[in-house]
Image (cartoon, rainbow, N blue to C red):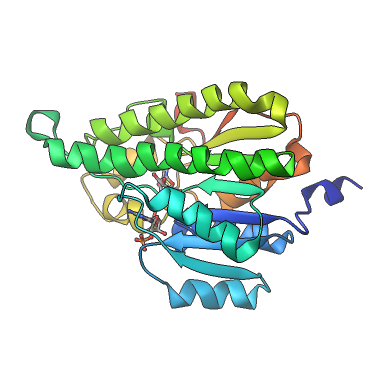
Length: 254
Ligand code: NAP
């Protein structure tokens, strides 16, 4: 049965930023498919935990601030100590800070690169040893359409650069570890309605442009990313690696 290939029974998934937005929807989808899910973020979110419980998801929360140098390694180690294995790593946590390049500070540039790029690589690196021991695994990185096109009207050079780095990290790592039965893919979402995009959706100087540049004429919902995440994390995608799957309502077609 083709549906069986989407099942994740017996597997352990770590979803960074799994406490809200896209990460929470992905955690729910992986959990509904049968995985034990570890959600990580700086702050516990009781509403999210209630939602996962209601959905019957077996989950744990681990606090982690991925802006800290050792956090990704510690998070993977803690996941292994609590769950005993790591089959799926979803590097979803990310931050977006806008600003004109002429006035962009080193500190903000570094903050974005630390969370969006450095922590993603550190988590990938830490996941390789357990995945190799187990005979394989799956890594899914959340990039962005902003790593492909320079979306407007907001200026966000650091964010866009960080997401392009995530896409290239995904392809490079996929090529490096493919023979070890470890698949590495990315999803590049367009505008998805979450806390991260809320400021832009509510901004009358930005949102009309966002909407008019999106052929489908609307923002997406986190659940519209989660199905693709489940596909890429499951055996249904067993021959897919190094892919950056764009989910953007058609934005990048133009
Ligand atoms: P969100 O609603 O702001 O959620 C971000 C998640 O990341 C939260 O769980 C947050 O938890 C966690 N996080 C943030 N900083 C962290 C840190 N320093 N350490 C650990 N966890 C941290 O964002 P989202 O829209 O769901 O975005 C998820 C991913 O999709 C990001 O990589 C984003 O760049 C990407 N994306 C989003 C959109 C969009 O339109 N929403 C479009 C393209 C790509 P805490 O705050 O508790 O730490």
